[in-house]
Image 1 (cartoon, rainbow, N blue to C red):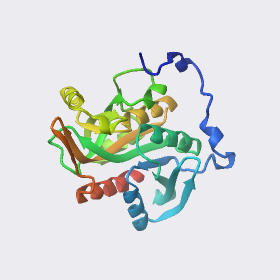
Image 2: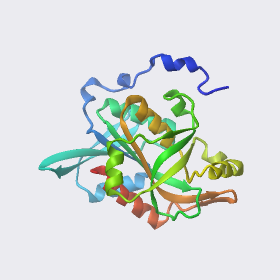
Image 3: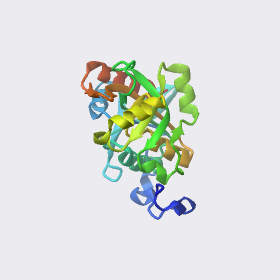
Image 4: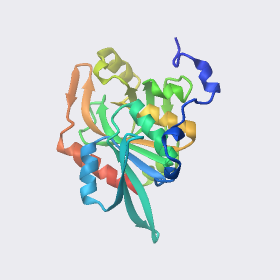
Length: 251
């Protein structure tokens, strides 16, 4: 069976709208740019050292958004750091849907990424330009295909010009506890270098609404046909996440 199970859905509008979950007075609550920070520890650490305007906690969106300000071209610019929303494609997409209703137009994800390529070092910063769709959420926004490629949006152009990120292809999966040897060898044979849980879904939603999306990450673990070596608590991971958050927030 193809996925989604009912392909006719692509010709129909949604019955459930995120606008129904957001109060009308809050619709312009957020600045244009928000950064999904999948490490709550890094988000809280960042908050202690950077000047921010206010924190918005929404039980509707199930997340916390810290608003930061910076002077650019003699104007004050705001950007938001999103945390406390969970992990994985469904949680990220649900948050995305409601944040766009609240005014967000540029979405950057910043997460911990597993390496399928032993050449990558722990703490290395990457930008996902191609994501293989082994999750379910993206198929409700974009017709079936093996992968989705990064749209060359304004954020992408700025990252290319200012940041030293390794461009990678990634395997996006909903089930990290069911990653198998056969899958790892399959994706390695296609030149896929990383594995994570959100990129293909976020890219699909961005494409559906014609909004800018970039998925960045830091190498935090190694996965091979021989097994898994996690390094999430490695000092280089936290340092790189903090640096990358600082770089992309007002890029």
